[in-house]
Image (tube, helix red, strand yellow):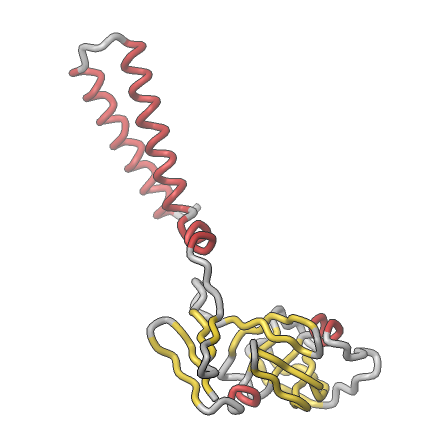
Length: 193
């Protein structure tokens, strides 16, 4: 806990004690009724704090963010609560999750996703180099047979496999440029052909 959090907790505890003491001093109820009412208010307070603290998780469960496809070929990707845009693509028949990264040059597969998409990691040649936020990493060029977003399929798509620590595969500009228009507006990213 930070010093600010501790100070806020002390302030809140003092505030509750003052309110509770004032209520007890002015209350003409029996002690058992007073304790019962105080317990109810404490439970309401704890419930409200729990809802506020977990609101991000509750919101994500209640307001499902899903990629949408319309009849005109437009793909709409809602912004995630962390500010990123995520897409699930079918890569060589396997559903893989990507984060859209306009700073990445290529489609970048992490080792686990490359293996799931059917690439033999033992036979890949990691002779390429890529500069990342975590330093330089080795990469191996590959060709994706088929990659699909909803009804849109591309074939023979170049990509690289990252030999470093990459938690999430990246959908970079090499693929995004296949779309006629990319727009970010109103909390959504749209791709159209």
